[in-house]
Image (tube, rainbow, N blue to C red):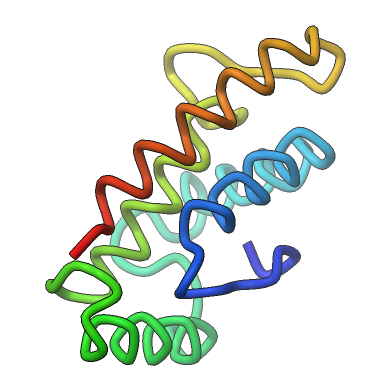
Length: 121
């Protein structure tokens, strides 16, 4: 998640970039899933201080009326979950980089639109 530059004013774009990063490095997604299962099955996965800049940026965008109201952590969690819909953590379908480009473009467009609607003020 930190490999992708965060922009609270473009959460749809951030989600799409995470989708692409998950395609490039599915092994990292699997490692995070393993960490969740084996080491931290509940609560926050990592030290919450790592998310503080993202949460502050979301809160600032909310205060400026650019993002929907609500707990910034919940909003961040929702966007990450949406970006990982086709990742190795999916219980429905796991996408791979060698699938047709049209499939990825379709998913990116859907992801961008759904995140935009979810975070709109």
